[in-house]
Image (cartoon, rainbow, N blue to C red; front, side, top):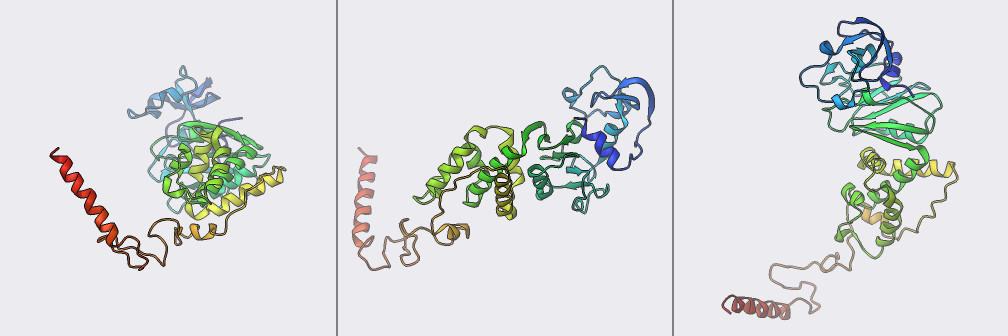
Length: 321
């Protein structure tokens, strides 16, 4: 593998460095550690606010190579720090975000809200070189510490960590995570493995168990974090189906449990709550303010009011015991 900055710089047409370049024969770049015969001095390149000293790969070098200096330049939308970056050399990518710099058809600068090109690349990467870096905060340099990949075993830079995996493993994690998201579970519930009680019903429990157990070994790891960062509400089904297609292409049998009849209803923002929940069915709305049952079935009426008054009286007596 070689540093992502070198591939991006070449694919972008080797743009000039925005800072003064000096010769450094036989030198190395302090950022990427690669040999360089010219570069920007560390004093000229790094400002007083630079804090990633522990990320530098050659502390002894006094220079930053031109590709690394280029990807670390720029402020705000004019630069790399704010954006997630996708680069592939085998074919063109969708256009970059409207506010991002346009670096050609093979480099996409995008936000966390649309990582569809990244998901497609992770599930079916080419044998040619490609790069993915994921910016979470938009405040840190990510691209200078990313790597260029070839094939289906890869290293993706996500904020401050390297995610090392392969396409089949990522497809498994993405499929199970997207399946749980489609059932209404949040990213926090998936990461912790602890669902909210109100989401678990007799019908949902087997599905939660199946998908959550499959993710157990990845909980607390960077790969599950990456999958959940990629998933957005608008593309849950798309990513789940794409992951399933990848697994089927590699001959992986998912042995999915059968979905119960009300699954589609639950997807509609809980539009059809379970009749097992007291007062939740459409034909049995309860007026909780006075304990009166408007269904007329004798439940929750006067007897309920007397029961409540009895316990309230005992609570008052307990205060003076």
